Amino acid sequence: MKHYEANFDGLVGPTHNYAGLSYGNVASLNNAAAISSPKAAAKQGLKKAKALADLGLAQGMLAPQERPDLHTLRRIGFSGTDAEVLNKAAKQAPALLRACCSASSMWTANAATVSPSADTHDGKIHFTPANLVDKLHRSIEPETTGNILAATFNNSRYFHHHQHLPEHVSFGDEGAANHTRLCNEYGHAGIELFVYGQEATNPSAPKPKKYPARQTLEASQAIARLHQLDDESSVFIQQNPDVIDQGVFHNDVIAVGNQNVLFYHEQAFVDTQKKLAEIQDKFNGHELHFVEVPTAKVGIQDAVKSYLFNTQIVTLPNGEMAIIAPTNCQENEAVHAYLNELVTLGTPIKQVHYFDVKQSMQNGGGPACLRLRVAMNETELAAVNPNTLMTDELFNRLNLWVDKHYRDQLAIEDLADPQLIVESRTALDELTQIMKLGSVYQFQK
Ligand code: SUG
Image (spheres, rainbow, N blue to C red):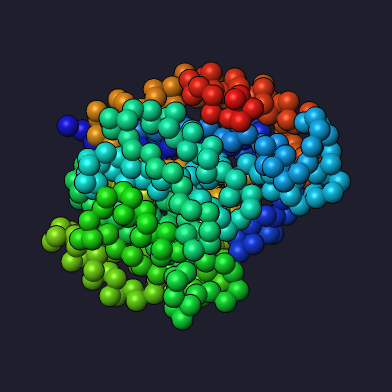
């Protein structure tokens, strides 16, 4: 039986904009009120996804969310026709309107946590949408995320979908961005690493002083229980609170793993040596590569600016590993020099491929934020909704769809334009037909 690790990339939605909504995410704050290009953003994402499919990797797409989110605006008391709701929100509560217009579901590393069947007791792939409670604009994603995941992985024989965790800061959950799986082969049982920012129920435990810790230990433990993981194959690691205060708002901004490689910054974790020993111990004697990047070579600021760790490490069909990096890594002298050196160090990582995903990067989302990993065997892959899998045909179809429906430019003031509701709904309605998703959006119910 063949095994794959498929990447499901988030299709950028028609309202992609820079609203400065994510306190603690330096790029989001720095680019607040800049003019975005939804069309260019969607095309950059599609190009990256298609290139990975062309490298021989299993690649799918996840549909975006319905924005502006009229349902939430009505829930908080704005009434009347759709245009009236938008108009009143724009006048009375512009910050709330901005939160209801974000295309943030494109960062599917935050869509859910996924545990492959090789790790779970019932032998199914488990999905739990992230509740994303730390940020208002993201906290309105999980229900529709659950619908989209269920329409994509639409076979209960192989896929087990859970509800998102309770919507309280004690269970702050940001999904796969704080979850890494190490394994020998994708189809073999692996070690699931859960990296959390704080302990909600232990006030004396360390936590960041300035920026929020978006993931709690309690949430990570709940996911491990729901996904029926063994204690012997789960490791809980605290993220270094000092780096959260320097803009590392998710673990995937400071560490990334693939198969038997863990690539991380020297300052990423608390109790690093003890935790690495626990991982090694639980890895049952198989070979592991801990690739630690020292501060002397790449400082935290360079890591945050370039997104060196928000890269995807993928295993190519010939068995070599490649890093999928944003072009921002090429533009940063220290990081570029490090990556040039890395491929000569004798680790499994032998190649680096650079992609321009600047529209997403300006909101703090690199190549790894844009994808949700799902390790699957060939039977499970065959059970996925085939219309979501990347092919030449889907690529061409989605590019034409973007050309037809997306704006070249979007300014923050444009979010109050009622025509944007019509454009977005028309586009998404057509998309659900292209991807054969059924009715996943509120406006379709
Ligand atoms: O949640 N940015 C996202 C970026 C998510 C990146 N994901 C991972 N690291 N996995 C966030 O902070 C910015 C939206 C704005 O400001 O308009 C935003 O939501």
